[in-house]
Structure formats: C-alpha cells, structure tokens
Length: 498
Image 1 (tube, rainbow, N blue to C red):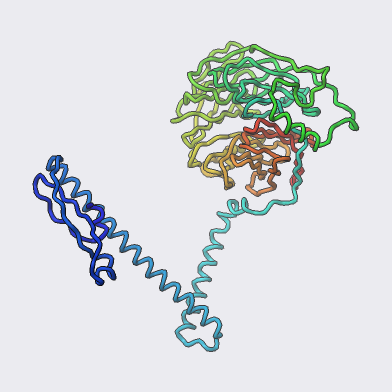
Image 2 (cartoon, helix red, strand yellow):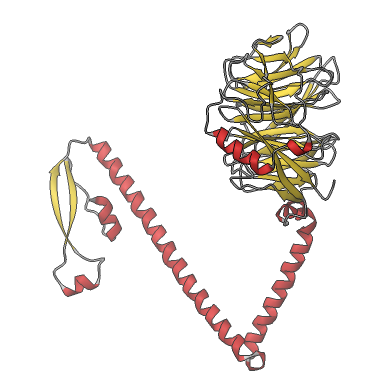
C-alpha cells in the first residue's frame, strides 16, 4: 500500500501508464533487517488499473503530500522529545545543585540564579500590572462565604420538565410555573398546593410572566402562540405551625410523587381543596411562524413583547392585539426576552451569540444596539432594578453590563457549565445562576461568588436546572428554582449582603 511505503520512508517508483503499483511488506530474513525495522524487503505487484490517468496522477500527488506531512510531524516529535530530555536533565541537575548548597555553586550557576531572580521580579511586575484588570474575573474563583442556603419546600405536579418559574407582582402573590407537559400552574407558596391549572396551550409552555399591576398571566408556547389569561385565585388556608410537615416528610413525599402519574392529587393538596382549571385565554397572539420561546410585559402593562424561533421579536398592543413593531436582525433563533421594570426598554437574546437592546422611549423612533460579548448561545438576559443588564450564555459565563456604557462588561463570572435563565434579586443585588450540571450558584453584581446551593438527591435538583426566580418579600422562602426533573424547589437564602 502507498501509505505503508510512506510510513516506512521509501520513495515510490513512478507507475506505468494504465498500471497501478501495490507495495507489500515481507518479513526480513537477515539479522540486520531485524535490528533496523525501517528496512525490509518489498515485492511489487503490477495490477491493471481502471482509473483515468488524471485521477491516478492526482492520487499520487495526494500521497506525496501525506508523506511530506507525516515526515514533518515525525521531525517535530523528535525535536520535542529531545527538548523534553534536555529539560529533564536540567531539572535533575538543578535538584542536585540545590542539595549541595549555595556555597558550593560556581560562578556560572550563581549567575543563572541571579538571572532567574530577575526574571521572577519581571514576572511579578507583570502580574501586578494586570492585577487590576483581572481582579473581577479572578474574584469569581474565590471560595464561598458563610451564606446560608437550605431547601424549604418542593412543588411537584408537572408531568414533564419545568422550563420557567416566576412570582406574581400583585397580591395575593402566587408562584407560576410552565412545563413541557403543555400546562401552566399556579401554586400557593405557603402550603405547596397547586391552586390553578392553565391548559389552553397545545404545545410546550416555555415562559410565564405576570402583569405589573393586574391579575393577568402571559405565557409563550411551542404552538406558535402567546396567551394572556386571568390569574386570580383563592389561596387555601395555611395550616397551624404544629400541623405542618417537616422538610424530610416533604422530601419523601416529593420523591414518591415523582414516580407516580400526575393525575393523582397534587402534593400537599387536602381532600377538600381542588385547583381551578382555566381552558381558554382572554387574549391570543398568533403572529409568529415558529415556537415562541418567551414573552414579557412592557412596563406600563399595555403592550407585550414576544421572542420566537422564527428569529424575530414582536411588540403587540394588549387591547387590540395588533402588531406594533416587528423586531428583526438576529441571525438565529431567539432564546429569551426581557423588559425593563420602569422604562420602555427590551432585551432579546439569541443563538447567534448576541443580545440586542431595543429602545422605545422615543415614540417616534426606536433604536437598537447589538452586543457581542459572548462566544456561544446567549440563553438569558435580564434587567436589574438599577441600570444594569445581566446576560448568561452556553459559553459558561455570566456578564454584568452598564446601560450607560455597554462597550465592555463591568464584571465577568466564569463557571464550569452552561447557563440557563438567571434572575437577580432587586433587594440583595444577588444573581441566581442555574446550570446544566444541576448546580445553582449565587454571585453579587461585582462578580464575587457568594454560595452554591446544595445538590444532593434529597436537597436539590437531579437534572438540568432551567430557571430561577427571587421573592424578596418572604425571607423564609425567597428563591425558587425549576428543572428538567419536573420539580420546583423553594429555598431560604441568607447572604452576607442581605
């Protein structure tokens, strides 16, 4: 075979027209040949070839190129092996010199030591020079502080992975979840009971956001629609303190329910309380041609924005359901959208590794800014209560940006797993980061690590964590997480910055 001949370092004879050569290695019969494996005897077999002459010539050229590349790599490997041997000898010599003592060194060795010292000093100066610019990144690797994190309650009832969790903005406050099982659920946070089931979608429900000042919920679905429906509920009575189940009982009950059909009574439900069922929306938005991955309310609650896999975001009027603006420009599918809590600003994220800031504060014209700070899919982008934007990506980083100057991030948090839908506490300024590897990490807006939530089978998620949501008004259970293990977990977080 030609490749075998190239590996053995032999030059190939030029084939005759209409013939092909096959080189076959035979075992060497002499002692010299056995000592030098690069030498051996070959037999040449001439076979008829059906290939046209130009194809045969092209094949020989390719084989010659392969041979040259193999030779180059082989030479490089030999050179590297020699360097490794030299460095090994130097290392052994340096160890011996150190054992002898400095007083026994000659002038040449002392000069080398002085040279090494000057190199170390130069290296230290370089580290000091770049310390300020990298301190925010390095801070993300600091060990966690004494923040306290413990699981409070599980909410189990979905039949498939839970994509997003959110808290209503009006009283009575409820927990909202959406799932690939095509339902949205509202939960009583104090008892863990499901109080409402929304079954109006025919596809996976991907996001849920609540109206800023009314009892309305907005859900986005894989059926290419976004629905607005009434979220008013009657909460069950909270049992007396002595009748509440312990955390261990809740965990065991959740583990049992997880393997059962969701048609049974919801975990924590009493026999005399049944959740309400809503089957149709008040308003439906149908302008997209592909999956709607997220939808959110504008600050005044009069308009909604939707983000879709058709690479567009759309701004709708709530009362008339008419399309106000079609936001185009992303090169790939959108992954999320979020609105500013007080201003007419929208951010959209995409698989094209960018996120865009859309400004509707001037009613006569809207502007857009594109930010390319990530190297992979941007899965999450959200506003803080101040003038910051926080983005999370599959490139395993979270970046904090200043709305007034977004040329470079204020802080970069580097992690070991892809980032899903993050949330930021308005009260404590803490970022809750859900990961593909089941972890949930807490960082402040300066990029300093605060804590990592427990991740055992009994006190955490055991599959990908899809999203988080803060509830600052209840210090006993102020963080919620959802995952592809069909669970929603309530946590109590006590941080040093609280």
